[in-house]
Image (cartoon, rainbow, N blue to C red; front, side, top):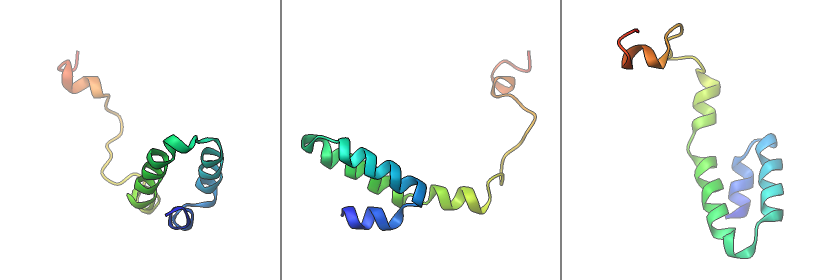
Length: 70
């Protein structure tokens, strides 16, 4: 499982993964590996780099809709 996670991460993520792996207690290893496996397989980075601004509208604040523009 560790090999598959490493192969799926970018160079920058790989450094963070290695550092966290080195500092993780054996009791917490399963949770840590599950989190990284989920992160590496969710496709978020691929979608972000493929179309980083697709579907976003600029110039509005999130509070505009809630407060009726007040």
